[in-house]
Image (cartoon, rainbow, N blue to C red; front, side):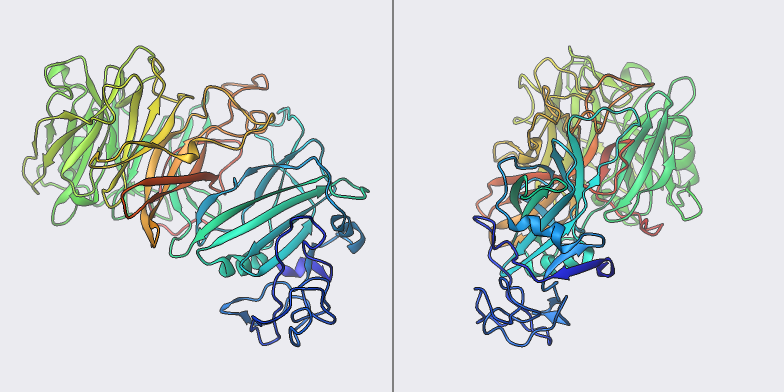
Length: 597
């Protein structure tokens, strides 16, 4: 990546009021000199104005250019300001002047975000009134500070006729530049600054600054998600995206909707809802392979026949009930069978020699108007949490503004090759009987937390813009917490309505232990950003001001040793298509096909 850049020995951040502290220089052997001066050095390296290598002043005999070897176990950073190919030193010199008072608006990643340590070089999404001629990205971790100057890249439009207020552009550092700073940060804080300047300007127009934290021990997500390419044309698919790569299609709807998917706990199979005959729905369990999806060998012949002939919706699976020892169970919603079955929970052991469907009790005992929707089994397999609602459609919740949506739970016991038993349903006290609606429940992998979406009173519960993600301890001992990721950086150029349509939360399987507590990562979909940049439409153009297309975002959640829940802003998961919507992402690795490249 560094082959397309040049370097120049100029002050890094030194002339920006309140700038970041400067990097310690690196010797040719790659060892940082902790005692080196950070002042202006004669013949030193990047410390301030310094020369070709080493630390300013007494920093030793450093290498030139990008330095050499490993710095304290990390890749060597560039020892001078890095210029993108085609940027002249005279152009970059504009950033030595004091910035103006029109800061750029950095929409993503937001300041304060916590990301997995393996996150790729962030692509900063920035808005200014006009397209800059040159931009500068500065990163600092510990004593290491580096600067990159390049051309802004115009952010692609969702549609060729999109109308944009001002200009949106991106900038990101070369990978080797990022890798050095990321390694230096470890699990600490990394600070950033973004500056821009018009062509021919004498000074930067302004500067924006913020920070992020990287958590070592957490890999970047490899996720599956539901993609909507064209609502009017019915182009639906289930995609896999390894962050830093391009998405690849696992299952295509071929003109019919596929959705409400779940990846099996062993990472081999995808269960999803598909159209059947006569307006009914069926569940497929497919194993994605390099040559395309095939019927999963985890299905018995009896299980495959039952799923293909029974109308079911919203399948989910649990690590506590998906193995050779327990049998492989799907929890779903029965979508046929009259009053005795319609809208009730259904359990099916799909690998049983004589597969049968077991129907659960009334979702709200004694009140037949309530149906079950969007069930999820706890990781230990001991209970199912579901939405009890008067507005169920196809196993999910509806747009009906007059419906009720509450979270309930029911104990369950499964026995391999035997009939499961259900206990007595009960309302979840923190997420039922409220003026709002509670939908889309999701357990953390360790079963300690439960996330769900809350929608405003009197609102619908599908693609609802008032939706917000809440997290609560799964035992209900703490009050629900609205995550910080429900909010996004605000500016006149971005969408602001009743809300950002935050929905479909899913926890990852990784947790990271730190002295301050246990970190979890949460994926959810949200319509945020520029409505003109990511324009929403059905069957053609819509006027500017429509909601942005949904995207998948990642947010960290922390549980302290005292049991308190804290959260952090959300970042866009890179690699998603600009011209298609994304929903229902899950941190599940599909082991039957290699990650997309």
